Amino acid sequence: MLTNLLEELARDAPSGGDAPGQLWRRGRRMARTQRLGTITIAAITCVLLIALGTATWQQRTGVEPATDTGTGSYLPNRFHEPSPHLPGTDSVGPSGPLIATLEAPRKGWLGTTNGLVGVSAETGAYAFLDLPHAASTFLFEATLSPDGRHVAYWTKGEVANPIRDREGDTINGYAVYDTVTGEVVSQKPSTKRGIGHGAFVWFDATHLGVEFGQMQDCCGSTNHRATVFNLSTGRAAAIRASLDSASTTGAGSVIDVSTDAVIIEADGTPTPAKIPQTAARVGGSQFIAMTPDSKRVAAIIGDSSPGQISVKGIDDDGNGVPIPGAFAGVIAWLDKTHLAALKPRGDGPTLDLVSVDVRDGSTEVLSRSLDNFRVAINLLGSPVRDQPPPPHPRSPWFLPITAGTTLVVAALAILAWRRRARA
Image (cartoon, rainbow, N blue to C red):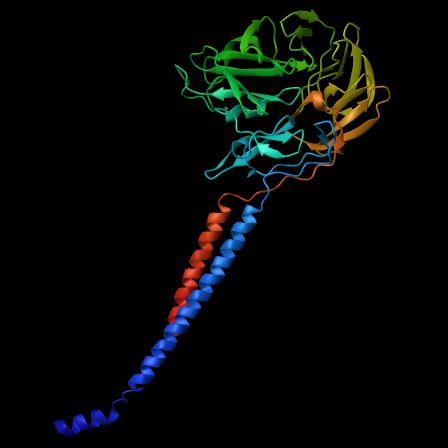
């Protein structure tokens, strides 16, 4: 019985399959198929990674200069919104004299911070200014010199008795960045709890007015004082004046309207002036535009803007002669009869930089789309040229994430192909 059962099982058992030679050839074909698929997928992956790297490399970190003006500087006819991933001056080098600085968010590997973009007056290139030890919380107060050569900003650092519940950076001084050489000179006034930020105003290209106080608690400062920092000597001298609401001629004097209007020279010499109440400053405008000879001023009189600009002599009574039209702010005199001012475009928040003829109020647009900016007022007379938009580099995470995703997909494809080849 057992013998019969074994014979039946033997008859029902499958055959031994292919002959040994055929099995060997079948295994070779399977191995070749797997290798071919793996090599193909790997080659496609390499091509994709090379193309990705080439596309990323070809992103320009600067823009081509506009038509050569022959003057060394030009005013772009439009300012563009900068990319948060623009390179910084630490990687591309100093930009040279700047026509303007723009506030903009700056994104990096680990998040977003406040940034300051410099726009070259000679090439139009956009780049974030890498300002050593900058107090990023107060970067919006950084001020461009009249000739575009220097940027003044507040610095952060340790102090003897910091205010623990204070939000933002602790200011321990201020610094001046040279946009041509990249060098930085700094001043650190004596302080125990930190500097209470006040105001920057340039008297001229080499004299910086600074007002600051001493922090007492999280929200207030006392003992405010003003100094003039001389870039040529590297020394700061105290002056008996207020610079809190000062506007500059860019030629050696400022006019402050925080209380009674007074013209202040770089050595601190004051001269009273007859200036009525002016509207609040908007964007990169000034409270008052005063002629280089300090004899005439232009301002939006009253307590609100947009409004009419009035022009008057320093010693004249009254509000002066109003100019037809509505303007958001004044910036500087271009010549004896023309004024640089900000004019709203339609009913929106966009502002344009215009040249205003103070004789009849006629305007000419110089640059469009200005917001959160400072301009080099002594360069506003430069020729106006077309300005192409700056590059928009991708996030630094784009390349590693895309490359990693490509490699994972390739690995999964290879695994699936090898399993299919064995089936």
